[in-house]
Image (cartoon, rainbow, N blue to C red; front, side, top):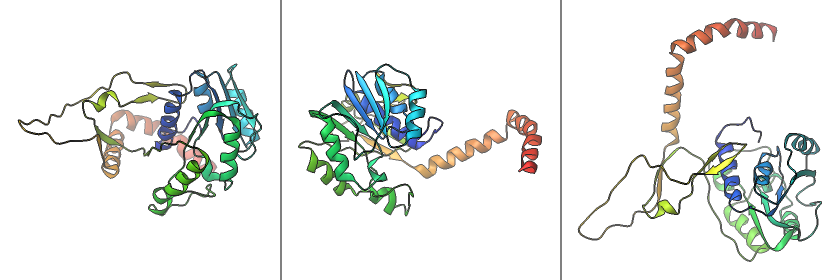
Length: 263
């Protein structure tokens, strides 16, 4: 992940960090496998102390040069040998890391070591059933993916209490019950800042009414990725027919032609 990436992967990662921002105020935080460093930097905006650890020396160097905060630093280390003291952190964060290696038990053991006794772990992992099997997809960078039951067993074997949440980024229509509106949290932002919307701005109101008993209609989403894909394609095609696009295309054509000839 780099900050030039704008895709559903970016939305997924930023959503996870948005949740962490609700948990990290005035806390000591470890971001293990901090990568580019944008997540650690976001957390440092509200945390007492943030340490980003990554196995890549190059990534650590670039992160330290890019993100400058008094309460933030990046150091080199691995998930199975975290170079930090025992019982130090209130919160450990690790997003999309565990599938990139096969030392899962060692990773959880190290996380517990650096966490305070009542510390909190927030960790994510792709579900192999849906990420790989159902899509017939192979990510060459993944060494050992986990099925849902395997991931849950790993967490429960190391922590007395745990809650699990399911995430998927997609284009959806969201329908929230009136009461659920006040429990529902919505975030927006980018790699520089994430904020929580204080008010859910509905475009429509749906009523279900009766002089008798009412059915229980839960929070629901409607998704159709293929439909959204077709709409986006149509939008792009419509843009290509505008005068401004045609002028820009004609102005750039000689440069594109020259680039092809040079290559």
